[in-house]
Length: 429
Ligand SMILES: Nc1ncnc2c1ncn2[C@@H]1O[C@H](COP(=O)(O)OP(=O)(O)O)[C@@H](O)[C@H]1O
Image 1 (cartoon, rainbow, N blue to C red):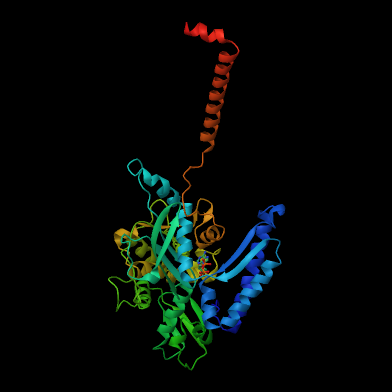
Image 2: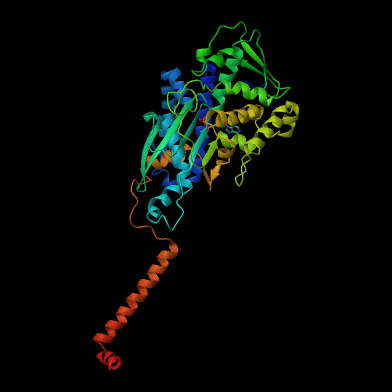
């Protein structure tokens, strides 16, 4: 039976081992891809996200140990290691937004072409929705420039244009921590260690250690002494009931601003198109709800989820033998969570849902915060747009041919004037 590892001591060392293994794998891959003579001059940065933010909240000392273990490994690699740090939720949101807009080309167009607004349709930036295991981010340029909450507002100057961006990172609202929060809430009134859970398929069973469940800062507040050391989760596969339980995670009771998402957090009216990536994409892609040309409407996404959650676990398992059991068993929860977060949490409607595009890659690059982080650290995005636009290859060739013709013409003219004055005179007379 699959047991999700929580951040108990065993969970941490397991997590460190996993991280170390993936880092080793990453480094080996990078050494294959980057030509050997460029290893030393290739900068390497490491940014850690919400999992490490949580670990740092829970035990700063362990978090620092993990970072320094990773640093040592990277320092001994052939690359030019520049440092490892835990990035803030705001940075994670901002870098995700920078990545997708950089890859979609939204910055450059809205830079210099803005001088010609009548000649070209101005392309707006696209909002970014990022779902991780431990946190989720929403970032976009709202219609109203003045923000009601300074902690949610960022200012960028990119390619000569200013952007006032709204961002918020919800720690604990990544899909793994959200599942933990749901489980501890379900446990509050439980008398036995057996929990019937509508977010898992019928026939699915999982044992969860109570100690691990409460070990996260996201669930610590719900801690209670229970007579049983393990929670025995038994699936009942019911989308509607699952959604009801999930929606309890979003506290909509009070809002100190004109508008909020949930938990009293400011959210300006949603504006424009959104790219939803990372786990938003992994889950919606598995459920066939991410079609890039025309993403499924909200109503059909809900019917798909109803149908998927109601399928018995034996049938689902047989249908997808190649999918990791941890992911497969949680797609019912994750898909329902995504719909609830976007609809109830952020307030996407039937209409605005159509503005969301679920993105895995843009071109050949992953949609996610990492490219934006690199672009920022390596100063790849200038604040000001250079006045000269770089020439395309065709433009360059054309300009060279033209200047060669002018040069030949000038030489011929000079030759006529200084060497054969009669040819000119002949022409004139
Ligand atoms: N194919 C997949 N199906 C479902 N979930 C996935 C898949 N691949 C990765 N995940 C999960 O998606 C989440 C996002 O991962 P990641 O982008 O690494 O975010 P973070 O570092 O913030 O947890 C993680 O919980 C990860 O386990």
